[in-house]
Image 1 (tube, rainbow, N blue to C red):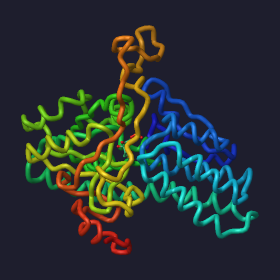
Image 2: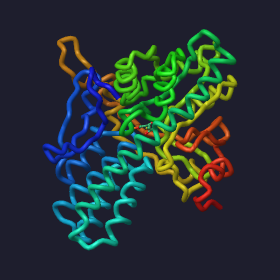
Image 3: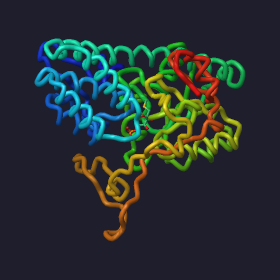
Length: 366
Ligand code: MRU
């Protein structure tokens, strides 16, 4: 998507400089910084410390991390160690394991001398595939928005609530939850976006608000607790969120607070859709609450808030007593029964085993 007049992806390979570049998202919206990732440690730190984040982008970054490491040392030992080091960075987003497995499965079969080129090629493909998946998600999601616009809101904006950042910054391009919104704007359908701030790291305030503002999409930033109230008063027509891992039976794990939005949407009869490329589906598990590992992050993310100070510098401020420690589960699980539908690159399906099986019949489901 565009930053100013220039088109950016969130990660890319610079052929001239022969280096992987990413947008360092820790500084947004206040500063737009692009950084180079070179060593395996650079990639691991960038994922773990959330210079890059969002399930699809985490996967793409890991793929490039393997590719760059193969240029340095293409041995079996290096491949296995790189898988382990990168896999240990963040536990919940399944795209990480998916991308690492893709890379390992291809490279393992090849002689060492061929690995660097093959890894580079596959990392580029994974990036391109993500962009295309998200474009397709946008087209399928657009149909949902079109229908609401025609039946419920002729001549008025469709009000869409989203949580966290499932935008182009969380993917390689387009975003998942935001792709239908961008496609609606392109199609001339007025939309208004309620952007949950998404405590504690405020991905909504810092990233989603920045990216949709950059594209001129009407929006308001709201506190995380406002969604239920807006729904009760008829101010939300549709919820679209992303996901870090969706089970083979349609349970959805996403940023902490998503579950509460789904409960409120159910209580108010508001459609609650989840947008995801298929690498976000964990076909090996059924029950999200029981089986998905939930990342527990540093309590300081809760007791301190990061932002721009009056003197223009960006820094943290402490918001709680010195003796209070934060508890910080980063994701929660929304059971499939609360999800109206899954928007995938192959179309929209029910959040269920049968729904997913209809779209992905090649997957083995029990
Ligand atoms: O902790 P984050 O910022 O990596 O969490 C991101 C989310 O929860 C997104 O909603 C999810 O990854 C979907 S991104 C298309």
